[in-house]
Length: 516
Image (cartoon, rainbow, N blue to C red; front, side):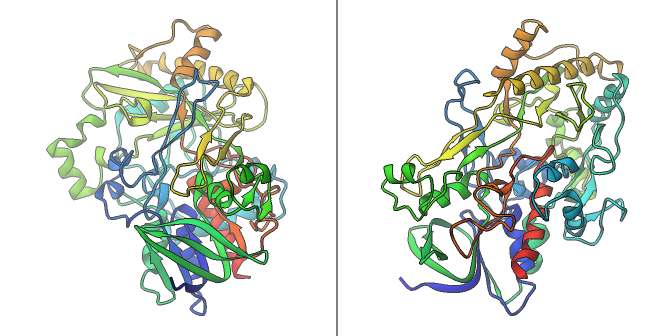
């Protein structure tokens, strides 16, 4: 087996990896090699927004699950992750959200305050609203208004205002609080994944190599330095070596898995699996965080939910104008509230979907409905990603420990109360007459039980290779030269909001760190 050689080897063509491949290859004097475990992003279900649900548990999905969650009555939660060019940005809800400025400031890391990152958010952005103090134009990532215009999404925002909450036209502006419609990573009603935004324009560069269907098995470390990877393309074993850096962008589940498989992690756990210890790094795979979410689902008889998307008139509308139900990202509207009475940032986010959304979309809707509910933003519970086997093709063992800290469950109950109050407002009354599988009552005990039975992931895992423990502030793995991790696993604490835009901004900054 002969090894191929590059300068920068990027593992994982997701939200971060596509950014790094696009930015680093702008220098014609360096060779960049990007490898992705999945195939090319040719499926039309990627690019037509409403098609994303059809990707769940498909060949384009890593199709992970948690192990038995001890504080969710032993339930296992489905954890979709994109296994395709664009990674999870090729199957996510396309909400453009940066989080709260305090999230970054509280990391306490040099170079990572919100003021440090705002230029990278703006650099990445091509916002159809135009340039401002908070937004950029001309960047690779299209940021647009939603084009579905479902009346239930409008009614949800109106009902939140009726319930006493502020309206908010820009969650990425001066204040995150309030309710409104989300801006989306779309252009002309089609998904703008990181592959669409950053990778596709770079594909013609002679110094950029992109390989799909290559699963990395481990990182090669020689004399304390990462020098490449070994893996497999289908059944063919391959080796690729990097003369400058190996950059791991495999996500909050797969990045720690690959470090562990490479001998970088807790020495006792590695030794128990027969993996030679390269660096004893107890923090690898620890600190797993996510946003638990629990929907309130209200079936009704009005034929206006996303179930109508297949009708010929709406297919024609999308084909001709890029609007209508097929352009829906599903969570079209939402908002941020503080439930604890404090003066700090929000602790709950809402997502409202004009659809009967059951089991994260794995259960087919049987009625027209609107679904909305809280997710806990400031989670205190921590989980882990560990190895079940030294075999690199075995899925990692993931346990989130949702509600391990009772404060998270208390916040969820407070959020459910907000959601139930919004549901009682006049604007939503045509749609919220009946709650699907309601709690026994609105007591704390019954709402806690409802949360345990209905909690799902909001698809925002982070923190498993965190800066400050596993990584330094330049995203370099401590104890190994020539190796960085650039993805959500590097976040010390999870930001308050959807994670795609923050990961892209982190990767923009990382590209500058690497190139200097």
